[in-house]
Length: 222
Image (tube, rainbow, N blue to C red; front, side):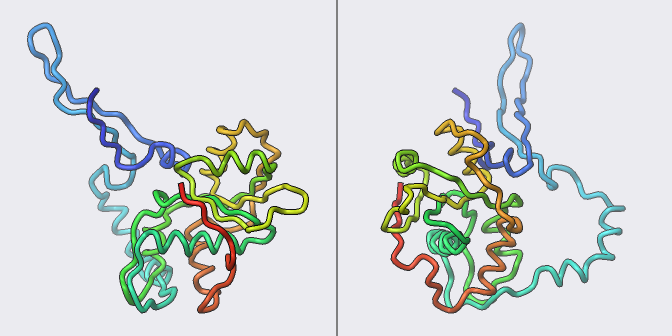
């Protein structure tokens, strides 16, 4: 088996409206081919040299870009990915009607440095441009979901009276759950939220110093 070393999950890349190419470098040796290198290449902006005309046109937007990278808050300490995950899951728990949240540590891309937290740092940590959804699951389906090792589930301690769990998560994870549990499309409801990174930034700006969105909820790690 050859070593591919994909830079990110292809599923994440594809469901975030991106794509990748598989590249193999071969050398002819007599009547056979020798494999020199083999890798997966995400098709992002830095795979090609910068276009000078585009760079010149972008200079006119420098001020707006700088304004968009505004300071969201100031932090007294650095935060690792696990801490950001806990904070983000609390943000998801604050979505109306949620009684459970699904996410994964691997979807948090990097930590935050101490001090000024800018919008760009939030995007670097949660760079997902798709919105949030809410899954409607039965008690049995939810129990099955909690056994998946790659998922972290945050839930209310007492099951809902009607035994229907409203699980808030990303569009990507919703698709994964739907495929795993063979759910029909009507069991997922898109939410009227901005893209994930903007949702998180707005939450951080509006949340009180000690957010109680998920107070008393139970975290079930994979």
